[in-house]
Image (cartoon, rainbow, N blue to C red; front, side, top):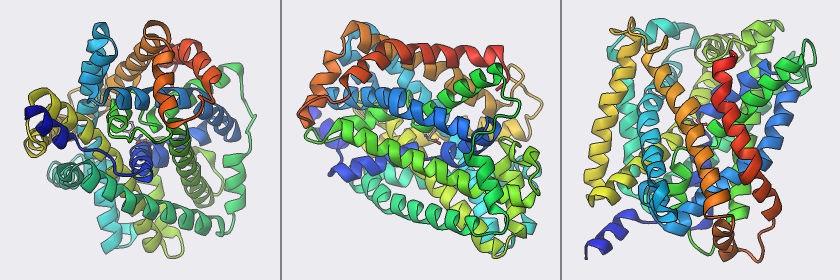
Length: 453
Ligand code: PFF
């Protein structure tokens, strides 16, 4: 009886397209819209794009396929899944549960900032947008918007996989795609956009030293990892809800195409817009993380129909961030349901509570506790750093070892064959999991300690 209960608490996706849109919803997030364009601009435009694309179809494909296959084969949340693959690798399941539990709080804090910007654009023009560092240094507003974003996220998770996550993704993802296509078309019609587009798409070989090339490779590798929601337990969890008869290889390719297309289109909006605004001064495009919250609102304020465009842009970012935070919350909730046998509602409430407490640390880290530095970082940056630069590469590295050398590729192949006549990318997959992915993971682990990316 208890097992039945648990199974019904788990649920599953009702259709292939539902799964693809939900997984794409997880992958398409702040990483695509805020991080990808500034990295591309910083690392030589077309060169970065090319390196990124090669990585996406090779090692990104292999890692995503691995996680989804592990999830579907075991039919469990991350903790149970890694244990079911090999008992000795059980600690990996714990790591895969801790990672989203640490990311979700600060992701919702940033989601709150985006909500705030959206609400300002809806009600006023971009000129009155708050100065970013001033806004986040307060306590009340960032807290309120953080709570709203957290509650919005939890609605889909409360409703369950098919009725919540799948339905929300089936509605939000096409809206997101329409918005981003319409906005990039609009930006490209502005005077001077062509120059910005060239800067973004053509390889920029000026001062491109071998050292910079290595940095570009590491940055593209890291971005891929971040963008595809790899090594945070999400794809294992979503995979566990996937129908057995659906094609794994085909689904992974479609998720990747969706994710990469959105990232490239986001750059087509942001880079030309900032380029026109700054009269071609590349330093404003290279502004890094501040680009979305400082530079862009000012750019929108000077554009024709700026308030409308600004509103559309921040709605777009909100939708992207929301479907990603839903996937993070679902991963943690699935663990609580399975581990403690609680109902979905009770598990969700526990997750919201813990997320709220941890998220408040990040809010306070910019306001009352701004003097506190962890290894020289703000609290939010610290959470971001230990998850993205340390825990995730470690998890991905050990997952490659587990699949490549312990249970062997056959383990994944059997699962792929359930929905396919043959494993088309077997050779590529083999080489990636055994050799290339582990090396890339080690590179991501080492790079922040030896260079300044
Ligand atoms: N893949 C999503 C994004 O690109 O924003 C979600 C995500 C990435 C969440 C990285 C958290 C994270 F650290």
